[in-house]
Length: 110
Length: 117
Image 1 (cartoon, helix red, strand yellow):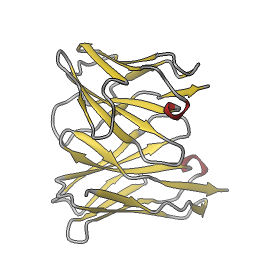
Image 2 (image 1 turned 90 degrees about the horizontal axis):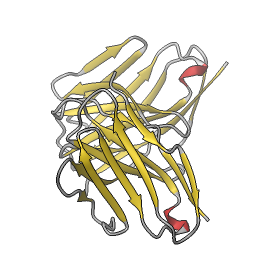
Image 3 (image 1 turned 90 degrees about the vertical axis):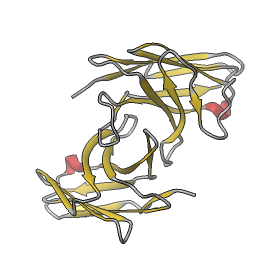
Image 4 (image 1 turned 30 degrees about the horizontal axis):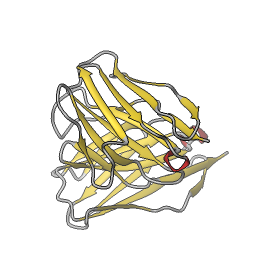
């Protein structure tokens, strides 16, 4: 069956450091992979989309990599800030809908 | 960006009653909307795909007679939880994509916290 796996343990880092989150998938052949941010009690918010032929995508302090051989995406937040504290979700298409990983909770402390 | 509005944000209902949740696309037309359910510390689970003017497509294990979906216009989809029970208590979220295509982002409503007592 299709699976999207994210490190379920919370990631605690100090302000200013780089946070790296991992998304692994099985039984998908995705042309695109997306990352979303979800705050408690809120719906997810889109952050980045990366295509299968793109190894890396950047947006301000965010960077995403996509390795279709390893079936893995890495999500980096550089110069992290307390306001970056949230749950980050990896998503892949299943037909026209999106399937999500469980998400990784990030806590950035001052 | 596009806006998807969901109402209500939270609702408490008695066991056995029905609850309706509305999802509106405010600045775009959505022929397709998606309904998800999320339990604490869990992933968003796709419940159904709502299609304007036609029947919804339900994911395996989701009871279509319990979770009624109506998508009567290009900007409104509703989810009705019928004969709600405490195990239906969850966070329900709707989603839509303004532009057709797999390489497009999805926009989400604020979510509805349903508590059945």
